Amino acid sequence: MRRIASFVTTLLSYLSFPTIILAQRTPTRIEINPPPVGYSDLGVFIRNVLFLIFGVAALAVLVMLIWGAFEWITSGGDKDAVGKARGKILNALIGLAVLAVAFAIASLAAQFTGINLFEIIIPTPQNPAPIAPRP
Image (cartoon, rainbow, N blue to C red; front, top):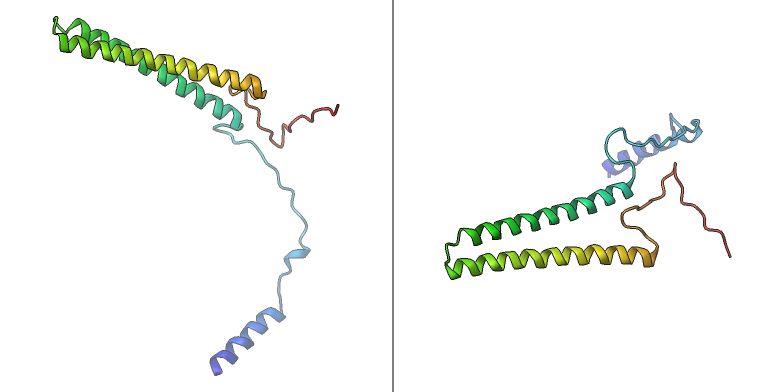
């Protein structure tokens, strides 16, 4: 019982005699500055990631085509090796078609929705979103 009483009196003494009142301090101005290094806009980051993904995919297709052609040339007339090389080249061309269709669908969806995936503008405090006029 003594511990509880001691705790309560200590707590009340701390609460009843505040030494610093933080509510009376003068307000400070908070400034948001763009980072000195890196991306200051999320839209630029998304655009660069999309270009990187499409570039890596196109490079992978090119590597697979060259690899398949090299295997075909070095097959020496072996029907199994020629079949594997032909399959590799065919899969690379299918990958290229899928990449082209994905790019076309992204561009088409951007035109229908009005959101250009390669020119994304995300509002920031320094660059607020424009307000569309009401009809």
